Amino acid sequence: MPKLMIVVGSVRPKRVGGAVGEWARDAALADGRFDVDYVDLRELALPFMDEEAHPRLRRYTQQHTISWGERVDAADAFLFITPEYNYSYAPAVKNALDYLMFEWSRKPIGIASYGGVSAGTRGVVALRPVLQALGLVSTGANVEISYVSKQVEEGVFIPTERQSVVLAALLDELVVLDAALSPLR
Ligand SMILES: Cc1cc2nc3c(=O)[nH]c(=O)nc-3n(C[C@H](O)[C@H](O)[C@H](O)COP(=O)(O)O)c2cc1C
Image (cartoon, rainbow, N blue to C red; front, side, top):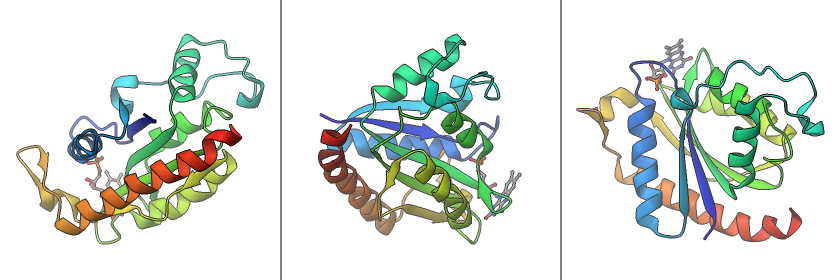
């Protein structure tokens, strides 16, 4: 079974991202094709990237980098959950990505973005070149949620039918892309 790492990118004390992440996690578990590793960047609490050497050298000195590197290394595919902040994506996502390099390379990634009217899509546009720099391969299907807080009731995200269909398509793509990319790693 491919190991799917789901990453919740919002670290605010009161946030919507946890509810969206739990929805995605439960859907991936119900799908049955993945071994799911759920990462809440708020809990992971990585400091601002604090390694001296470029990540391509893998000369990690901090225990949090070593642990994060091992965890990402073990993953075969990713699903990042990110809000849009000021037309871009969550800063904790950039920080978590910047820590590592080859651990991300030649692995597929899907994104569930959310926000106001734009559904987080401007944030995804900003994220794309970063993913490319790290050798991550994006799915075509990405979940886009506009006015996200309207879909959260008592801390639970209630998806539309379309959002569930797109998430299922995204998971399908992760399986196919992982099969194609894993021989290259
Ligand atoms: C600092 C900040 C900037 C924001 N900028 C945008 C934005 O550019 N576009 C948008 O659609 N929503 C924006 N929002 C609204 C967020 O997308 C919305 O509050 C969402 O719930 C944030 O996700 P979170 O609760 O998981 O942190 C912004 C919110 C914050 C806190």
